[in-house]
Image 1 (tube, one colour):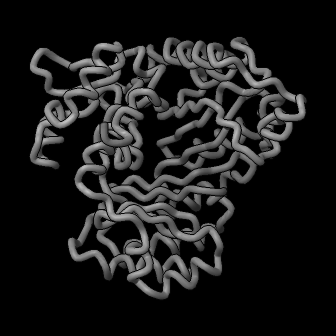
Image 2 (cartoon, helix red, strand yellow; image 1 turned 120 degrees about the horizontal axis):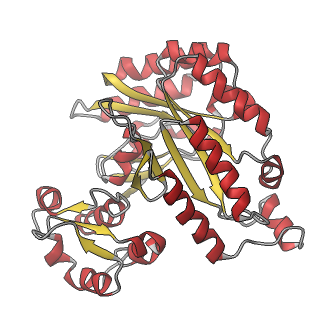
Image 3 (tube, one colour; image 1 turned 180 degrees about the vertical axis):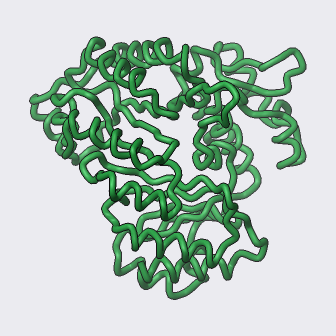
Length: 354
């Protein structure tokens, strides 16, 4: 905690623009293991060193196995107003496949504890495309979401990382990887089932539709998709600050050495030039299904028209049926339904120069 306070102070000293913080995200690992008084200290340090908006979105990632009503109430009093709960599945067998430490019952208990704590903005994470998962299995979890009615939903297709226990189990033949076509059907089924109550605003994210109430889109993640800068603090944290993308060391001792010198905090990263920023703007913005990449926003940022800058790439994607103009004025470019299913193919168009 002392190291985080030091890093916040050093980063604030480098900030000559008096940036106003409007979102804080406590994530990575299991931040809900920290005690409430530690959270108070951390948030106090951030507020002491940066200008934090009164209505800032303050999110915390939570593991169902670490939740109690008392703890969540204390987090709320410390300032947390949004919780992202890593449920992953509502079926015990799938949780065992994923190596999760919680059960279906503990997930429901965690949701109850969060609701009782009066934290009003709840996101639930689910994973599809698991080894051995059927479409019926997936619909059980989607139906559970519809009954719970969280304010926000994130659905991710499983990526099996090399060297993980799950990867070794698949390699040994214990589990059979799911067919890509079935995973795509699962994604389409989720879109269909959630459409009546949720707005599908980003490839993997849905916000509940509540007439007359503030929208429930994740304001913090919008920072990333709108290609805005953000500060990362702590071991292994990533940041994009003053035009530099950086990553803190994962090793605690290396991290402690780094934060002693404010110049080493960000300037050992990679400076992003204008050409790369423009490509990032396209890749990230196209993830936003409703807004896409707006020509006026792009022009304000870069002083040029993206339809001219990326004419050949956009032409290829339009001819392939992967992107389309949002209106007759060509004010914004968005993914088509087919483009949503083949998003990586779209994004790779902007990953480098022709």
